[in-house]
Amino acid sequence: MLTIEQLLAIAPSARALRLSMFLPHLQEGMAAHAINTFERQAQFLATITHESGGFAHTVEIWGPTPDQRGYEGRAALGNTHPGDGSLFRGRGLIQITGRANYAAASKALGEDYIAHPQYLERTRDAALSACWWWEAHGCNELADVGELSGFDRVTRRVNGGHNGWSDRVAAYERAKAALKPNFSNVQAGSASTAPAP
Image 1 (cartoon, one colour):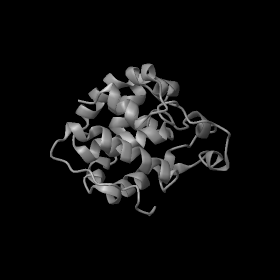
Image 2: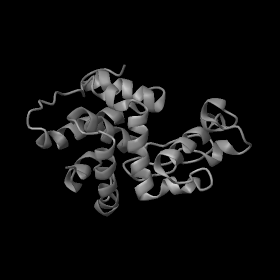
Image 3: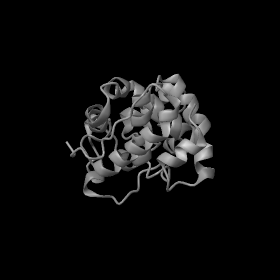
Image 4: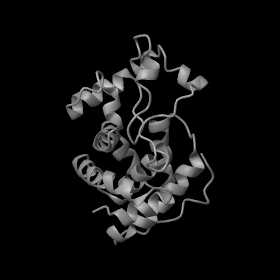
């Protein structure tokens, strides 16, 4: 069972009170979405730690940057209405992005994120949507590959590339160290010296 001490070790810049608000929802979501092995948990927690800036943000910081301007009218994200790019910016601990993903999350979690996109910023929704997205997009199976090879695949699936790779790997190392007591049969190797793919 994930603890507040483990979350603090994984996201050391976060405040304990904020992490304590996310903890029960992460426990619930991880159990519901089979994020239940050493590698699945380590890679998931490292990913959401990076994506949320250490649990500081449940909504994408908006510039807009050139990449963010590219959300507008992007059919692959389902952004077919004027203003969808900004309206359906990244939200939740894994930064769900685009009208189509918001619609899928609405169906899966029983909330109307299309009418109320800001709901994904709420603590429970931010955590549960990240767990749902992770499983729905095959990240458990990618994590099962293990070590940096699996984490590389997870990162590409979540981010489309290797944005923030060194920070992601550092969070992954912290997650493995923090979670190891929960999985006594695991010998967690070091990935920190491996080059970025």
